[in-house]
Image (cartoon, rainbow, N blue to C red):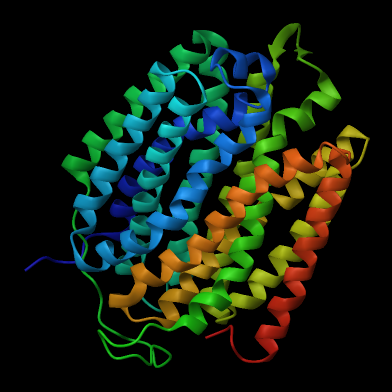
Length: 404
């Protein structure tokens, strides 16, 4: 009979693989909106938004069956297979050209990320108890956002040093190496028993749609804004201030590397926010209060990002950054509080299907709105969306839906 492995060790192995898996996807988000790199991929700029959102759209189809598989079969096997599929998708980007080949790679990545993200969240809930669920969820979010930052930085750097295709070949090799690391080091985790009185379902009975749908609202919002609009427009936003390059300490730094550095700086703040928020939510039992506060702070930061004065706009970037990691960590912890272990994968799959819908619509909406609105106005609209969602979250809290 398997014993429960050390959460710290499993999270480290799980987090490293998850972070590395993001290399190919983050590289595309970092460089493809730039017309120079879109030309090398043989993709018209008008179709970039479609490609950047395509993997999220296909996950709407993949998430639910993947959630069922994760609840029924070996989490470890599905995670290793998903990471290998992620390496294959990056190979397609590196070797292929043109919209349809790139779209195939995005579909493969969508399937891979469904397995990686839902499976990773389920493993975290396997490891956690009621006293540390928020903290462990926050630590996994820390690895995820660390992966976004480092992979965006490395993706931009690899592109500037090795060229568009050379950088993607290297990213594919590193992702395949991470899959091999999981094969040797990632253990199978044991599903815990029902421990919380709020987990009112009996094992194997009905699915709680109320919990899933209520939890989906803040996830949709933060994924639409941060994984959608902000991720797809970072290189354009930064270009408004620095052009195609900047001179730093006598060195000319190209825009791709600068954008990767910006994303890395943004995610460094996110890395700190999630585990700290998770720790306090465990102590206070206030998951949804923390979510509401994070959305309000994020709204303020998004509004400042629309400033024409670069230091204030940069402050807005850093201020808004923790919102995404905190909301995702608290939502996963809330699911663990309210849903029995045999329903965790399916519940998470439904919640993040709404999140994928938001992150798929984000780039499409951003590129569509940029035809008639300045980028600053788009950020102000995102701030209003974040604030409105915070109001709804507090209303749900006062209705005793949210906190445990």
